[in-house]
Image (cartoon, rainbow, N blue to C red; front, side, top):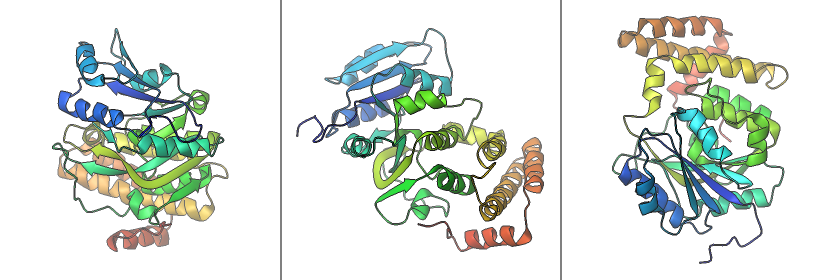
Length: 324
């Protein structure tokens, strides 16, 4: 099959930030790029490791058009994401993480979405979770998972108010960074990813991008997202970063006329339930500072008994009233 798109479309850069990459996982990531039905116009490897892995990248890259950049001093995770994107030259960028992989049609499908919608700023797609051995995980799907919100297969156009409500109430329902393609012009306009957040960087970025342009979600699972025990999520939860990020997201995005009064009540009720859960989990593990922060957040965002009760019933049913 030709590596060129069937219809004229955007130029696509893959920004691939690195930090002490696993050779096996990175090999799968790079192989998934070589197998694309629509090849990327460039791949930018931005290495934040102490020692260069340029030889590993060269051995894996094959015929891909790529550039390797090694940071002289460590930037940190999110600044390295921004640096990788900033070094790219395509009109559109996919920030692919070193442990994840793309399905063969991922770039073709996402770039086609932008070709037909020039005003679009960001596109998210579905994902399949795999374990450390690249086997598909069979975990029970949580009620707030994106597949429980976008239940009808297909394409969803989302404006900023709707995406804000869905993300604040349910969490990351739009896509992890590896599942997002976005306009480079809009990325520059919003200032990239905000490293003042720890756990919710991708949520905030997607919302700011949706506010600047428009968002589209495609339910097709086009990304293989690897879950393993060393991911930063567990540390963020242990140190209470998710609690602080939740409050920042609310202050930044739920103000003004973005959400209706009813939606605000539902968001706040969700915050109460999630903070209570965080507090119980922290107390069980002896993390009393985090437990106190969670209890304070539950008190701060308490809205009405009805809203909190409805959210609890919804979760006990293992259901999601936001299903579309």
